[in-house]
Length: 437
Image (cartoon, rainbow, N blue to C red; front, side, top):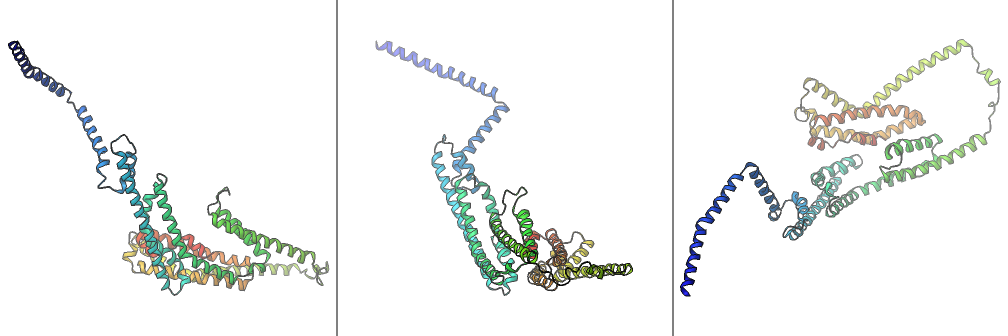
C-alpha cells in the first residue's frame, strides 16, 4: 500500500515538473507574442492618456498641502463626486481652506479701506482751502489708496453667483466700502446742505413766474428724463437721485401753480388801466412817423444790432479766456511740440508738461472755476436782471470753456501714461460739467 502511494506521489511530482517546464513556458511565450503584436502606437497613446488622467485625478488629493487659491473652485467641484475614496474628507478640508482664505481677503479689504480713510482725513486736516480742494481730497486720493484692491475684487466678483461664501464675502466688502465713504463724505455733505439752507431760506417764494417755469422744464426734461430715466421712461437708473428730484419737482410745480394764480388774479383779473392806456386811436396817431424817418430808424437798429453782436462775441471770448487761458496756452504749446515730433513723450521730455506742473495747472483751473464761475453768474444777474439774457451770454461762455477742457482731457488720456494720469487727478468731462452747472 505504501509503495503504491509513493509511486503515485512520484508520478504527480514529475507531471508537475513537466507542467512547470513546458506549459507555463508556452503560456509566457504566447502572452509575450500577443503583447508584441498589440504594442501599436494607438494603444500606447491610449495608455499614456489613461496614465495622465490618473495623475490629474490623484493631484486633487496631493495638492492639499500646497493649495493655491486658483484651484479652490475646480478642486471642490471635482471632490463633490463622492465616488472616490476619501473625497468627502478632502472636500471638507478644501471648504475650510476656502472659508479661511475668504476671511483673510475680507480682513485685508477692510483694513485697506480703513487706512485709505485715515490717510484722506489726515490730508484734509492740512488743507487750508477745503472748499476748492474737496474734490481731489475726497475722491482722487481715496481712489489712489484703494486702487490696489481692484485686481483682487475683479477676480472675485464673477464668482459671487457660484457660491454663497463668495457672495457673503463681497457683500461685507461692499458694506465696508460704503461705510468708509459715509465716514468721509457725510460731514461734507451735511455742512454743504446746511449752508445752502441757511443762505437760500425761502428764496423760491420770491422767484418770478418765468424762473419757476424754466426750473420745472430743466428739472423734468434735462435731468430726470435725459439723465435719470432710460429711453422708455420706465426703468430708473439712479433711483435715489430720481426720488429726491421728483420731490423737488413737485415743490416747484406747486409754487408755479400758486404764482400763476396770483399773476392771473392781480395782473389780469384786477388790472386797473392807467391814464392813456385806453387812449386809442389817439395813441396810434401820436406814434405814427413819416416813411423816411422809419427807414432811418431801421438802419439805426441794424447798426445797433451789429454793434451789440460784436461786443457780445468779444465778451464771450474774453470771459472764457479769463477762466482757461493757462489751459489754452498749454494746449498751444503741446500742438507746437507734436507738429515737430508726433512721438514725443510729454511727461518726460517737455518741462512745461511735467506731471507735477500739469497737476498744479489742473488744481488752479479747478479752483478758479469753483470760486469765480458763481461770481460770474451773479454779476450777469446783477447787470442784466433777465434770466433769458443771462443764458444767452453765459451758455456760449460755458460751451467754450467745456470745449477747451475736453480737449485738455483728451490730451492727458492720449499723451500720458495711466500712472501719470492717475497722479494728475484730472476730473472727467462730466465732472467739469457738474462744476459749472
